[in-house]
Amino acid sequence: MGAVKTATFNINNINKRLANLLRWLGVAQPDVVCLQELKSTDTAFPVDAIRSAGYGAVWCGERSWNGVAILARGADPVVTQRSLPGDPQDFQSRYIEAAINGVLIASIYAPNGNPRPGPKFDYKLAWLGRLLVHAQKLIDAKVPVILAGDYNVVPTPFDIYPTKSWDDDALVQPESRAMFKRLLDQGWTDAIRALHPSEPMFTFWDYKRGRWGRDAGLRIDHFLVSSALSSRIAQAGVDKAVRGEEGASDHAPAWMVLGREGKRARR
Image (tube, rainbow, N blue to C red; front, side, top):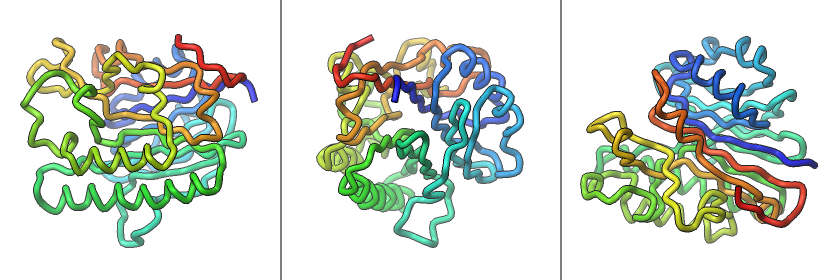
C-alpha cells in the first residue's frame, strides 16, 4: 500500500457547512475522512455532493445532534460496526467503523459530559469504558486499525492553552484523562503527539470569548493507531486555517499520513 492521508474533522453540522467541507476536500485531498457531529438525519446526509467530490461514504445520522461518517476517495467503505458495542439501549450516533483497503477505520464522537457531576458525565465515562473494551479486542486481533475522531478529552495540561476557565469542564477531568491514558496503555499510538511532542497542536477553539482570535485552543481530536500501523506514521498536522474561514466549524481538520516505509519523517 502506498502513502495514505487520513483526516478527522468535527464538521459541526454537515449541511450548514457543506461548502466549507467541499472546499477543504478539494484543497487537502485526503484519502479517508472521519466526520463527526453531522447534526443530520440519515436521509438528509448530502451523499450526492460527497460523491460528486469523488468520495464514497458511510454514515450514521441523528436529528439535531451527534452523527458520524467515514468518507473514502474513490472507494466505498465497508461497514463493520454502526455503533459502539456494549449497550444495545444506547441509540446515540457516536461510532461507525469500516474497512478501507485492508485497514479498519473508526470515526468517533465521544460524549462531551457536561455538566458534571451528573448523568451526562456518567454517560461519558461509561461510553469511554465501552470504547476501552472494544479497542482492546481490536488490539488483540493484531489488525491495522485507526481510531480517529473527537474524543472530547484534553489528554494533558499541555493540550490546552494556559487557563483555569476550563477547570470544572468534563474534557479536562482526571477521570476523562485516565480513560484516554488507559487507551494508550493498550498499545495505541497518539499519532499527532508522537510526531509533534513539543507543540500544542490545538484542534478546537470555542466560539465564545474570542478564543479563536487569541489562539485559546484545545487538542481533543485524535488519531489512535494500532501497532500494526504505528511504524508507518510519516506526517501529521492540523489544517488550522480552516477554523478561520467564514462560517467555519469550531474544530479544524486534523490529519496524518501513513507512509510506504516504516521510517517517520516530520513534515
